[in-house]
Length: 167
Length: 245
Image (cartoon, rainbow over all chains, first blue to last red; front, side):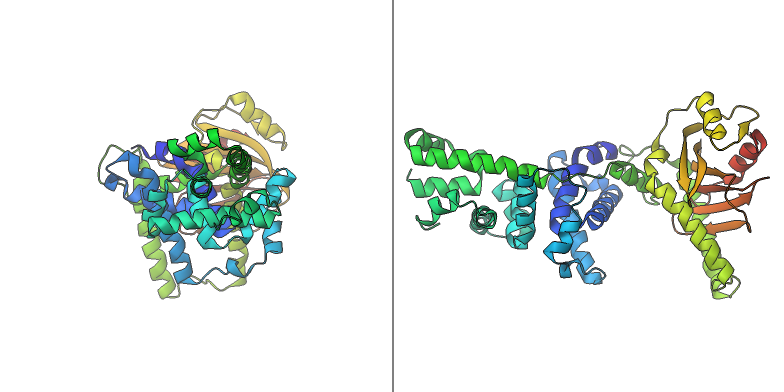
């Protein structure tokens, strides 16, 4: 696969995944750049173009893990209010902004599979494989992610409908 | 299918509920309403997750890739980077010499003059990186654009200059500059002509990714920013010969 074609196909979704993984625009940008550099260096190992998306996500997740090993970044100490300042460039409606604030408040274990599903278009099987989790756990996290979002948004029409039934 | 099972499935993957679940909502008004609301909110969620992507991200990636010293083993994915490769080899040699020089205290790295030069050079680098998309343009600009860009900073062209792929006026260090990108076989050279920028001392600065040279013009200064190891002097000589200050 041509490198430029790979970049064109995936840079947007990778950036968005990285952004929601890190909650930081500049770290997300660095992660995406580094991911593609590593992809470039081992492009010949990509035998199957269908696997490119998962391959890139794997590289990005490893690169993100390396950040913590280096202990050079402390974004996790940022409050939600501080994170809010980083969204100044978003041109969004109030609804979208409210959802973003709710997404910041979701715990990582719920937000990441949700982002992989909605942004990257991953199936539950692919998420399970990528995150090293049983598929049932992924399903539960996706369900709870959506329920928590509704709760955080104060929109309880879905939450009420399912909680009565023990979801 | 029971309502409980339907709602579980819907919350796990609203965009792809199985046929059995689709059959359920045709029969159950409550679940149909639940699913409609879920889909509305799923659309809003997708919109919320789609944060703006930096416009120059692809340019930055391609720029870094063009400087990358390692290439895939096969040839199918490669571009034509032989010139850049030569530049990298030159950079590696220069870096080795630089390390040796530092070890031997040949370079006065801690002197105030060096620090000031480094800060000025980094300012130039930052400008180039902020506008990194300019480096990846391949179409030559017209000589009319070249002349107008010079005129905007009170400079004139004595002759045409071939090989320019970007021209624009921008603010560098608070001063209006003429910004050009000249493509060479070894890579792009960014030229910043700043007739109102004070010139103090020549700067010859390198870091891992960039070389910056600042030279005097009759009035003000000119900066040449390029990948390390690239023969920027050719561009400097030609530009200085053509531009009338």
